Image 1 (tube, one colour):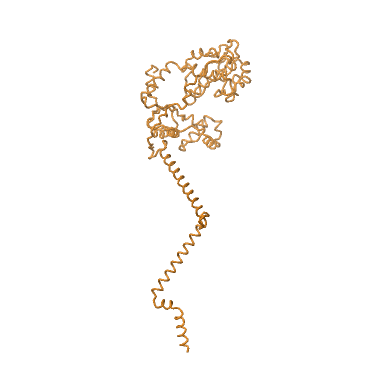
Image 2: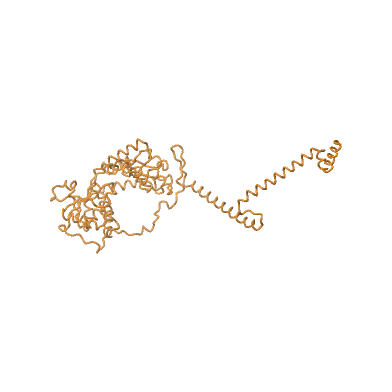
Length: 449
């Protein structure tokens, strides 16, 4: 019975499921259906995963209305990406074609050839060519020159710095003498601590022309009056010196603070006198007087004018009319670098020597040197440091000057020597420096040697 029940049970199971019977009869068919079930499950899982991913994007939906709106958003996003890509590509192309961009190969810079703009050498402010000079004397401005015995006293100044700074100091001295109705003693060009130059006023400028041209404005004498016997006192005695003049002082400051001491002592020295008179806080006639001094009264000696004309003609002949030249005044001498108290790239030995130099020349500013690094960073951030030759080269390239530009360097010995000049020379191979031999030829030609 047990065997029958077992057989019947087997038979009932087999009879109730013909498919299963077939499956058992054909194992190949069973395996094929199993694979189909696995593929279906995989496809369902993949769809579920995709739906879960797109569920993070709110603009994707199965709703036709929502789908139409989302397609517009997608189109706008695609357009935005395309426009941004085009702008980026154009900016990259323009950057690569920039005239100042150079490729470095070792220590040599290879700069791309740039077509020189026709307006590069033209005056960008063409309207200034029609301006009229303002140096003419105006009636009713400041009182006329008083008699010699009616002046309030004598003033004396040292013109410090380079030639440009000395010219400014001379112009200011004439203006201050006019403001205080004082007699000006011919200024002395102070010996520079870097150049060690012994040149005097009369070695550069025409003294007779200077005095004669300004005779209707200010009384000027060549030397200290004879009645003042102790001339050394004027250079050394604090009793004869006005030292509290602020930079860019107004005209009223001289009337209120300096004039009383001149009336008392009759002769006073003003020092230091670098930038000791303002421009916007003085009468207009005083500024016109400055123009007359700078552009008319200060006239170079004939030999110097002859030499300058020769230099200019030689430089023009070297380049030709189609290739203008540039005179570049690099302010990167040792004295300028030291006085700036800025930090520049260099070796440890070079930095140590510069620190010793600054400590020796400007001990009050140097102090113990602990504050100088922060001061150098601040000045660099504010753009108050002298430009290195390499930085000047980058600026000139950015302005559009091609590498073929003829450049004459007018400066003293550049701090750092040839290594510091290398970037400028690599970007502009037509660099002429120094002009010593050329100057010697010119001086010999006009008979000064």
